[in-house]
Image (cartoon, rainbow, N blue to C red; front, side, top):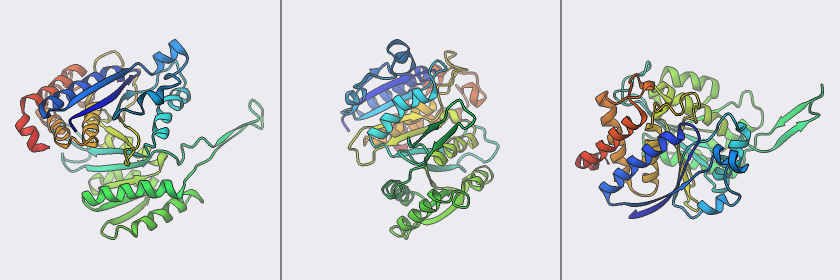
Length: 360
């Protein structure tokens, strides 16, 4: 990976604060490992909507389709409805670019307090189906503003959609501890979840070396709290994966460090990398947001693009800074600013290139 062109969308709220720190750290790793990055900064989001009535230009997808990756901060602001902000920017990117895997690592770092486990005891991945499922556009509203008002929201699962995300999860488990957990609710949802279970069993037949288990989503959330160290890879439908991938980072002490990757594994389209946290209007503009979720997302981006050593260097720098107990933001019990924590991680990448390569 000698070079790459990255579309940068800071978006809204704290996205404008954490993205610059993510870019700073990724650039630091790029200098160490000789990677030439071109950043295409795009002012899309709710401010763009306020000016032009759209979250992104009408030809926005065409403008970024040829990029190598997309680096996103956060989308959403109180002046624009969540439906408008989500379905006219984030969802079109995920679906038109076939980013059908939402990959979210869950890890407890040394230096981050968790009430549930010791550092190193929580380390697993959530693989969320990202293109269909409960977040379909099928449905509607009838008889609005009457006593007979009704709404219908359909879940859409396809054999093609289930099989491809499950295959990705099995292949990931094969690279790790060879254990895969499926989230379901087939005792209460009569059609879609039994179908999900059927496809899980069918795909499992191609991976006899992977130990499998499945849990109904309600008890699975309890297990995330009671014994999070027992998981390796968890695969889930769109809604269940969304919920689990917030709960997972929460049990590690803070959602502020959680990254995610919206992947098109076949690389026919650019993949998108973003932190799990939202735009957080309550703390936006205060320079106290945790930038690690954005920075770690940058590491995932570099790994996806083939720069594994550079990605490892960033993760090693995060480990080093968190373990030191210095420059922690308020969500981790410290009083450091967003920029101070970002700079500390960038410095750790730049100052310790030998150690960084070893971790990579």
